[in-house]
Figure 1 (tube, rainbow, N blue to C red):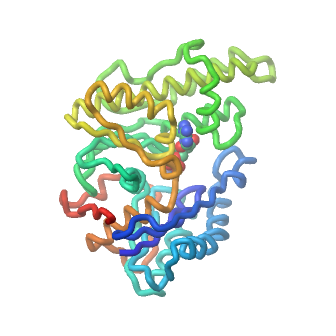
Figure 2: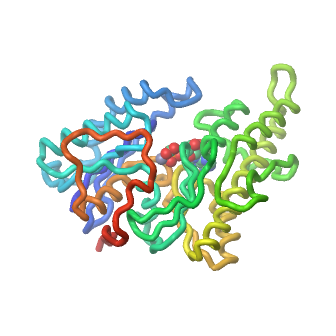
Figure 3: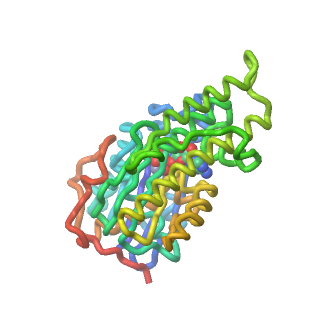
Amino acid sequence: MLVLGIETSCDETGVAVYDSDRGLLAHRLYSQTQLHAEYGGVVPELASRDHVRKILPLLDEVLAAAEVSKHALDGIAYTAGPGLMGALMVGGATGTALGFALDIPVLGVHHMEAHLLAPMLESTPPAFPFVALLVSGGHTQLVSVKAVGDYQLLGESLDDAAGEAFDKTAKMLDLDYPGGPVLAKMAERGQIDRFSFPRPMTDRPGLDFSFSGLKTHTRNLIQKHRGDDVLPDEQTILDICAGFQEAVVDTLVIKCRRAVLAAGMKTLVIAGGVSANTRLRDKLKVALGKEGVDVFYARHEFCTDNGAMIAYAGCQRLLAGERNEMTITATPRWPLEQLNVPSGKIKLQEPV
Ligand code: KG4
Ligand code: ZN
């Protein structure tokens, strides 16, 4: 089955073609980073308009790169949520209109399920069951995954998501937008233990997270080290980056270890933008390796938002017979567990 995937949930326009027999044929991504940089965060209306400008040229480009005609497509998958309403509508309208014109099935895909399945695009994919840590700009969740569509939420952030905490801390330090990856890069040159940071909610049982206190702690630390209207000196900024990142990473590692041990699982999957963080990957591998647990993640470009994960997740569900009516579906808030289907109903198809 040849599936076109469209991602427009936030500030990245992603389009891809995935074939259940041949694997990923092509993918293209246009990032709106420059557009939002001067505002220091995503401006929803600008995001929607830019998706409108970019989606059709990207679609043509990806079909040409995959060397397939749109008439060869068997189905279309687009991100139906969670995300920004206007941005979601662009992908939904495009996918639905194209599906209607070509008379092929269309399916609205859950953005976090697509993140969760993105490591399946790699040459050594994880096998079910596993615990997944979903860490993006909007979500921090631990999920028990028995099969596609068999999800049980084990814990989640009670306030800020991990990526959001990275972004807000970067903003406090006046780092370039988008903050997360920039802060992570600077952390490499900082001293981890010059300042002490809390590891929130790790000293009590449970699998929930809270990152807003860590943010306040960091704000106070910055305040203490700055002049009247100047930021702390460069080395202090690097040391704050390193200490902050270490605190977030340690907190995630402690909860992941707790989750896999409690669930009795031997596989951990990390997905979403923050799973691109190398310190997180390295520390998880060491800590969970000691427990005989393997850690899986997608290649760097498929950790953050992309069309390939939408095409892949959509293909699995379209093959199982799922499809939408020819109406645009956009669901800004959409709990993952609402996707549950009888376990094993959706069997992953391995490309040959
Ligand atoms: O999955 P994603 O692209 O979009 C959402 O679905 O939210 O995740 C974006 C988030 C942002 O908060 C970004 O700062 C964070 O992922 N991020 C990182 C890194 N790369 C992206 N955070 C820490 N370290 C990184 N290397
Ligand atoms: Zn995402």
